[in-house]
Image (cartoon, rainbow, N blue to C red; front, side, top):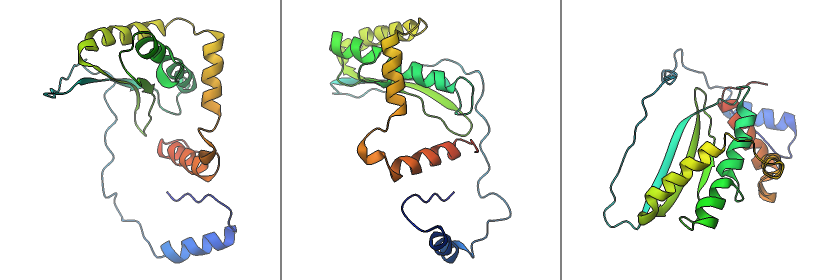
Amino acid sequence: MLIAVGDFQNEKMLDAVKSSLGGWKSPATAPVAAPPNPPTAVEHAVFVVTRPGSMQTTIELAGFGPLRGDAEYEAAQVATAVYGGLFSSRLTSNIREDKGYTYSPYSYLPTFRSAGEVITHADVRNEVTGPSLNEIEYELNRLATSPTDEELLKAKHYLVRPRSSADAGPRLARGSTGNTLGSGIRA
């Protein structure tokens, strides 16, 4: 995949690409076999990695999420933003602002060609690991309730605006196009 973004003349760019890559031939067979799709049902598991002397516990919860092309993907993005994707999210309000357990918890929804994920992350003080997990579970369960109009508005504004002025141009276009094509979505 080659993505070119910027202020250039198409013909000159195509000539430069042809000059650099025109002689390239793809191999007859794929150099690496495509991995199999992940299983649809997996056993729940807890992994504990001890870090002697550490002052914090890193909590990472993950599960399968929708693919970019799935009908529920956009709704999942909004739900993830409300839950933990925004600084004003329910997760941040609870375990950072209200309880003071952590500085920057978050959740996100990465997608790949064959699988999507839903991830929650928080680095918390060791002594509040259990209570933090309880509050994370509480917020995940509470997500099943309807978000407020204010939460929805904040999430939608966050999801449709560029992240920064630096991302508003070629970098955002290149990244968005690459992520979309890399996830298997075609125009």
